[in-house]
Image (tube, rainbow, N blue to C red):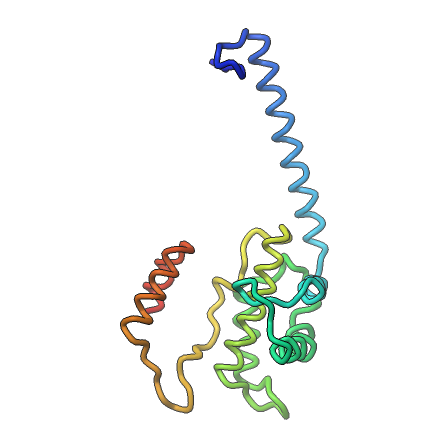
Length: 189
């Protein structure tokens, strides 16, 4: 039974008309989404990087980068990210593509073919993830492949293992719960 705005049952004709209108609206939304996805399929990651940088550089929390951070991140995009991923269509970037790139950088992506540190690769992977999250918010992709890609661990620094305190672990789990990543946090710990 279909109810009208006055909460009374509609006649069969009116009910069928409501259903037909709803069906047309749904088809229009699906059509709009299909067009958007088709346009996104043609968009390169280089285009997305340009749009992301032009819209204003922000971190994952949405706060603006400091001038030095903005300069360094633009440099990383220009010298490492765009040459490696800029030619890919946004829909072609997968966790496997990202992991191969991270491994390549860790094996010899630095100056004169020297390996980049795990910390550097991890930092660049976060930038890629932020740019892909921007693409997701714009509707160019449905899921952010960087979320599933495994980057080198940035926990090790100068040969020492940094162990988080119980309070840091508690804050991590609380934050993960708020954003629906509690299982990922549990696995990571």
